[in-house]
Length: 174
Image 1 (cartoon, rainbow, N blue to C red):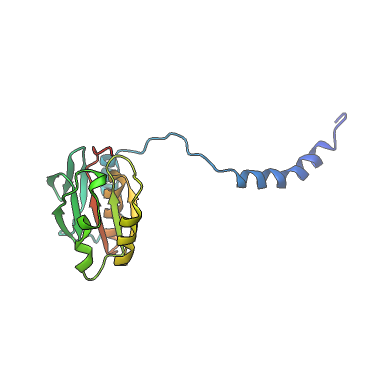
Image 2: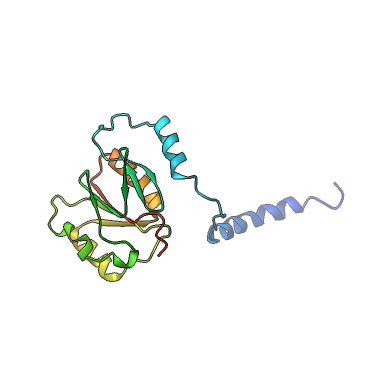
């Protein structure tokens, strides 16, 4: 090689610096759309590695702008799922979710390990008062869009984890 020899050595000395720099940079996810929940469920049904799911266990099968289908039954509006029991839930928008709307957790024993809060179409910031209330019950809080909340509930429930879900319909935008 003419005029070479030192380039490889220079690259070798720069490599640790390059790796260090790349580790510091935050990686921004690309704008990939998530697969639809219907497709996720159909694939999940075909590849269900947890094959001991009791038939009477609640399982979200579909979601839409106005409600959900659970165990083959379509429900309109918001839902609260606690201890494998399904209830309609009063809040219609995220701003209506208050400690009072979740007051069942003041008296419920045993307390679920986690509350999955489905915000509708978009994740919303939870007020400090609501966060404090949920913390005071002993539950952990997971705030996600309703599409992913339904899926997460299914997975945690099938694992046998004590989980509750409070879900607004996916069509709720704020």
